[in-house]
Image 1: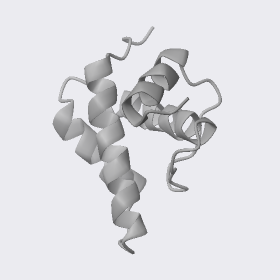
Image 2: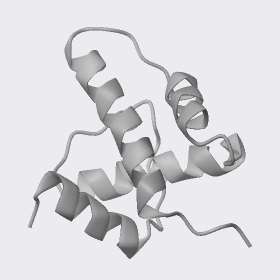
Image 3: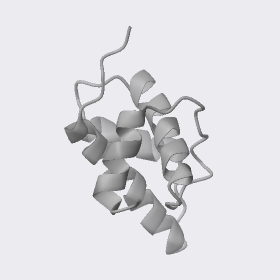
Image 4: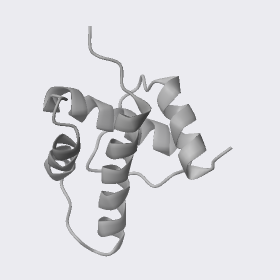
Length: 94
């Protein structure tokens, strides 16, 4: 079984995701692999095989909360409730 994600890791991955959203809104090209690489730099102990699915969880949770999402990162169906709570708090969403 995989290692549980910590809020400090959520902070890094959501920041990378939001950075990609911001760059895309400015007309820049982005890729899923670029986001994974950015996350790997901030999370050297995490395997990219773990980061990729987590980004899919971020897409699902962000979409559910009405936050901007990236079509380059396919959503995963079973996002953790802990991630939703983190995003609600961080982005001040009800």
